[in-house]
Amino acid sequence: MDGRDWKKFLMPYEQAVEELKVKFKTLRGELKSREEYSPIEFVTGRVKKTSSILEKAKRLNVPMDQLETGIEDIAGIRIMCQFVEDIERLAELIREREDMTLLYEKDYIRNKKPSGYRSYHMIVEYPVQTALGMKRVLAEVQIRTLAMNFWATIEHSLNYKYRESLPEDVIKRLSKAAEAAYILDQEMSSIRDDIMASQQLFEDKSNIVTRV
Ligand code: 0O2
Image 1 (cartoon, rainbow, N blue to C red):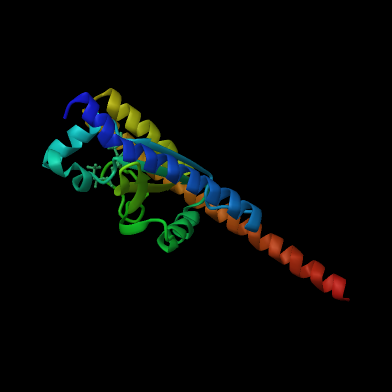
Image 2 (tube, rainbow, N blue to C red):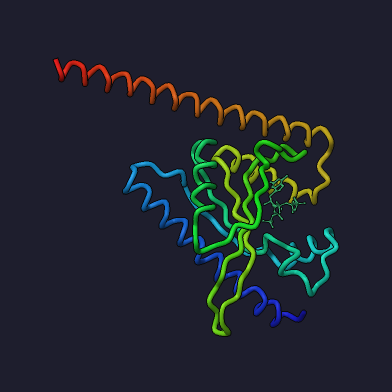
């Protein structure tokens, strides 16, 4: 494909990423005003770089005329949550949506990657309305906590910087750091549960006092 063709090829993916970012940001706003709490902390999105698409196609043996089905994360949306429990709540909201079709899910939280990477991935098919008519594109929605994102962002940039040839001891330390991030997530959830339990106790007590 020449440069001009790549631009055209990526257009529906650009559109999908822009639309999906708006939709998930709107969902955040709506949940905040309805329930005062949203499982979405913030949303980002990107279209995969041409060089990364080519690298992945080569690694997975995807022929050039099958990129649309063979590479599922050309359009990528990332949704950050405060707590691990928010991830399942959000996944459920995505499963129920009628503007995208869920194809399958990859649970890298229960089954972390060998690197230590944790995230919940949902592969969806999303219809974009183009000047040439409707086109369904695949998009990967990655859902993760702030701590998982903190780890993945730094690990990704270190790997990129060192071209995926990090020394063995660094790989081990990164994997340990991923565990520390996960323990932090669990501690934050536990602190939140304790706060909510004491708040409930306080509310129950003040209800009794008011009734008396
Ligand atoms: P980008 O944004 O294109 O630069 P793969 O990991 O690709 O061999 P698979 O099953 O295709 O295997 O993975 P999947 O579910 O498509 O996930 C790929 C994306 O998940 C990656 O995209 C990262 O965003 C994220 N990811 C997966 N494993 C790791 C990891 O070990 N560390 C970090 N930091 N991120 C990971 P790209 O292509 O790397 O990113």
